Image 1 (tube, rainbow, N blue to C red):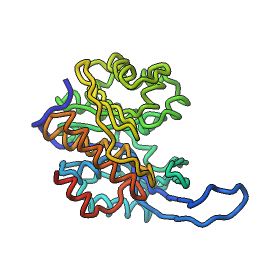
Image 2: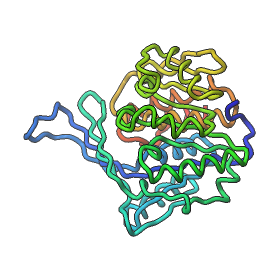
Image 3: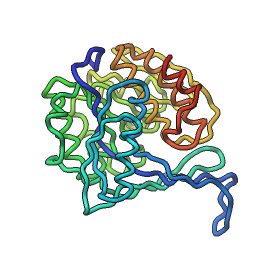
Length: 316
């Protein structure tokens, strides 16, 4: 089942690149008032974040997405090149490069408002077919499934990779958006993809399984919904749970020193995929990914510049 070491081609990630306008306050916001804090422009987008973290962890990685023919689109290409991600960016004059407002409160919790940028308009006809047929593994996020487009493009990419013998991972992305879309509709457009690795957090797993709260029960129910898939359940401050072949292994959290939760799940997914695709040990890959996400939540932004501690983790 699942992806395994020695996959025949590179990792491809398809989906959103967006710029995060990160706003972090030092105190609770006063309605109608003013406060000091930090305002930063940082590269983001769930799919792009996963691609960057996989590349940082040593995996040959391609990113497929759509940006505006604007300055932010140029900066997106420069960012991915700097991160050693091989970018396949479709440019358009019809839409601006995606952007997201990220509000981080004084406790480190984040809320997001996503605009509908160019990344939401990727079409099946714009996919790099030859690359997808050569891919060993494809990673998708639910942000490519909540609306159509880009759902048709993401589903076609999954079919192309599967037909060519590649494997597939999927991150369900947002329990609020799943609820808005409707659980039955979400399952309808994802259960037939042949998902090999499913990477929800607890809230996403709970809503998909009818409100279950116990992590092993959630993971077992998800394994019924996505037969044959390795379930990698992210549990934030409680670490993670690897559910494979009917057996669960708890992975302790690396830290609870929360500064900013932005991108923690994406960094976990990228690190997990890089290590799992290289070695095939899901538990070891989850422990590695937990150390990366622990570093991320202690810094601002979805993918802060690596320091010596992170570089040592990535080498470990």
